[in-house]
Length: 66
Image: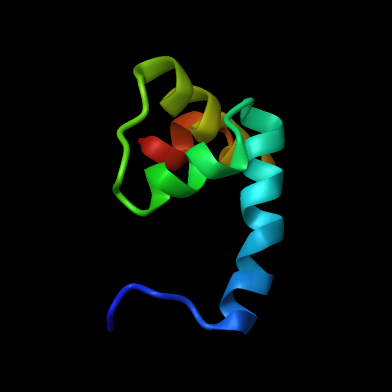
């Protein structure tokens, strides 16, 4: 696979990126760069993103990373 997403995958992923960026304070473009490996988040951003994901799926952060 060449790393590109089909149109339906992009549509499905948009809400995920929007939710994660909205809760973590990382903009959608930044979240996308991190997710694709083009950028590395600083520790505080990584914690905020992890916390947002944990909150979205209803588990404590320590369970997500533990």
